[in-house]
Length: 329
Ligand code: NAD
Image 1 (cartoon, rainbow, N blue to C red):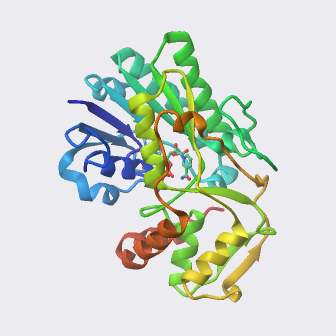
Image 2 (image 1 turned 135 degrees about the vertical axis):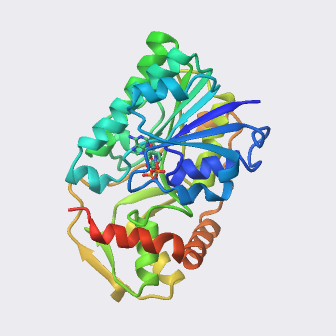
């Protein structure tokens, strides 16, 4: 039976991975013994794991804490690292925690995996490490050119992980994915922010000219891609998990307004984000060659996601109150 350690497993994507892993979404994992290590920052929420809390061991702790890692990690066969500071706007306001968790945390974890002889490590990363692309798509060997402090810190973590593969032979793979959407996403990110604001009868802030393009993927497809790499990825390799719906923020806003029966008068145009990347786009032939296919059509996934926020006010209302008390400067 596999023992899996999921770091950052109480956040949006990590908790989806843990819920899927423990409930038979992937072949042969329903019986896996799963440990979640998470610091429970503002973005981490044990409620995200409540549906499967009886099936996991939860450790509250910091991925930078080398003594804790040395205690928790031995005996695990697989480690998947989701732990990160993940919100670009927060990294523009203050990037110190981003460098600590996204770079130093990866170094601490890779060293601990090496020391414990972990058989399979996956470092979860982002398309944002490549910068911005006006046309075409990035392949896995594209040079890194991150722009935001968030993306630069993720790129630093990626390079450290690959250095452990090349220097020490650590069996680590990297995944890089586009913008995720789905249930349990902290209501500071575009889709849950807009949906919850519209549900509350408020206006939503659209950056700049609304022309920034993102390639959206449902969180369960992202997690299925990660599991494909856990099962069949070649150590030391990078795999893209591409989105299924390329949309400008303006187009996405239009779809959200339509779905919630609201008009453009509910949109407030706000000054653009500093250094706002224009477009991200990934190729994913390498992952598809391992048998991966996305399964959630964007229209269906978006409708289900909106419905989830509509019916889970008890989950997001306290988080919005907390965010209102300490807004990103
Ligand atoms: P999230 O902010 O929802 O969750 C991050 C989790 O990490 C939280 O549970 C938090 O408590 C935990 N954490 C933060 N610092 C920690 C530390 N020092 N020690 C232990 N735990 C810590 O983020 P997410 O959207 O779920 O993203 C997960 C991963 O996927 C990140 O590495 C992110 O870079 C990557 N990613 C996200 C997206 C996206 O669209 N959200 C896209 C591509 C890649």
